[in-house]
Length: 227
Image 1: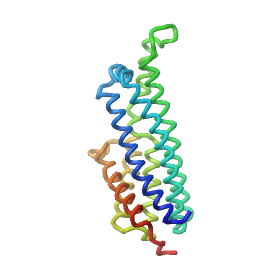
Image 2: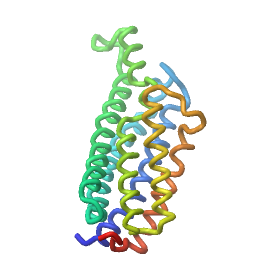
Image 3: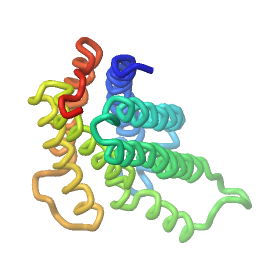
Image 4: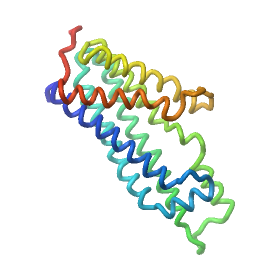
């Protein structure tokens, strides 16, 4: 495929990736209902359809990250082949880890919510242990999101270095991705990052993805200036 074809596919996939990510958050927010512990598991049983839809959308999210990795590699490999390959590996790892981490957790919560009182049902201590494991705080920082941040940082840097998109857009990607690449590992390890949590740290990356996607769809990419 040509670089501009890769740009069009990447632009569409960026928008699709952002949209389905928001859909997953909305579906799971409704399923959890702001509760915790046993109340959350009981509510998930009532909104099992939401969780099943989230599982299907998670598979699409995984596929989208693979498509983005391949297309962004095709756009930036002429600028720096090794860095572009590293970015591709990070985006592939993001997709694989995202599906391996989220889907088993969703399936586990569904099973736990639907477990009956028959001979196959877990006892109370086992139920409490499973619930604590599936809802542990560390799950709020998926490991795949760290690879997303690193991959996005690499590709943003290559777009900036090659002047393939406007400098302002590329710098926004570098800063937004760099913020995530620094704060997410700290949060995963249990360190406090102050106000840079949740939506506040993800909003710049979301804005960057939408702006870059529209540019790629409308304008495409320029030839790297350093090659």
